[in-house]
Image (cartoon, rainbow, N blue to C red; front, side, top):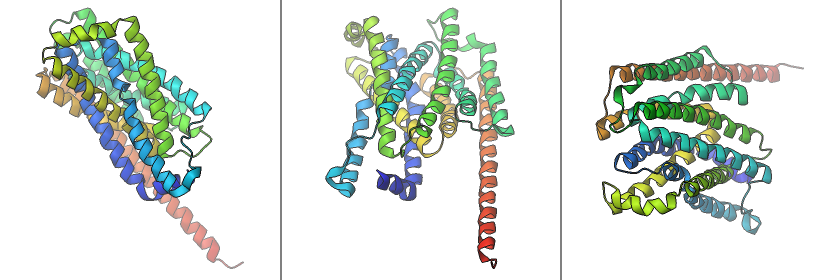
Length: 356
């Protein structure tokens, strides 16, 4: 396990970060579009759609098997099959249950709101992630991160002022408002989940490797799927799916294609998110999600012919301004840390050269 940790940290950290950022990008941009496609074309099961967000968890077994054989090649027959301790398993399972509840909130909101609106609301997640990271993992606020939080909050408020302007056909004003609130709550909850995952890494009392990160992700998604399965049973979704396939506007075969690809794309999102947290931080993961949401909004306008009102345009501008502010602050902070390290190294070198 130690060799895997060293191998990843020295030779593959940047490469893995790029891969995880790409996976997260596919999930952030594709997941909401697939979810909206399901509802627009006649899908009605909110619990089932929530289930799809983490139901692809068995796919995580593939990279775990590859990593196992890699470790076995180095360590021999003494290679451990898994590294998750009971403590980590319980923490992952609890976070997974909250993830399942978050998926339900997001699916409920997504069933009533256009992709462009829900994406802008989810952008407020960065604000909640920043606040959560400050209290949970003690990441300090800077003037730039505070500015980003304020701008993203203003963007969400602006959307709420004239929220009925892009209400989809067949959705009542009451349903739209509830969907708006549900989506905002989903953003808030997931914004707190990300720092909790980072805290779990910090408190793990063992080396955090790619294998352990994937194991944690699998447990979380399994718990979330189990939570949503209970919801499906209570709502009698399993009996309704066969009837729903026959009424789906795109046809029965394409119904299953939408469902399967939804599960795959959402799994890309969750694996990418925990991977970025492992290789960087929860705030970096939240920022990347927020940065990609304007792209999702534009894709929603293109594929679903959604209205792009002046309020959405201004909200998008405020969101982008917030992202730029945050990234500039991070850039300055990184430069400051790098300069401090150089000065410390110079002082150490000078001390070593001086005669006793």
